[in-house]
Length: 141
Image (cartoon, rainbow, N blue to C red):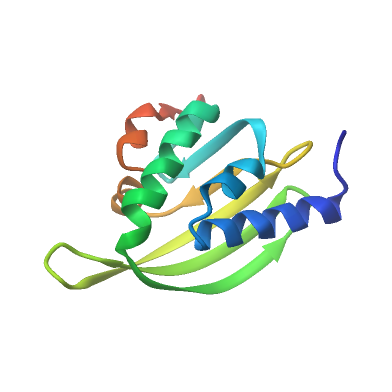
């Protein structure tokens, strides 16, 4: 059964909160059965639950502990989804930090989130996605 726009907005906020809190099960539970994650400007897609699961396993186990802090700079809403702009501070192996700009658009699906469109540097995307980066395919033009 299709959700209302208000329900999808709530699901998008639940997804973002679950990511921030390290809640793998809730994060995955907000997704439609065949999620698609788009990486820009890299021009790549991560498609399907197994690939997205691999991403989130890395994200929570390896990437999230590297986060020294973050700020949400803005949030906006349209008929396609909920957009969020962040500055994320990542610890480096040398003991310093790097700051990365990230825009994530949580895309509405039928019963949950269709996926996400992420805009970030290649370095940041590779840090976030780890081994799941190799599962990505070029976006058909």
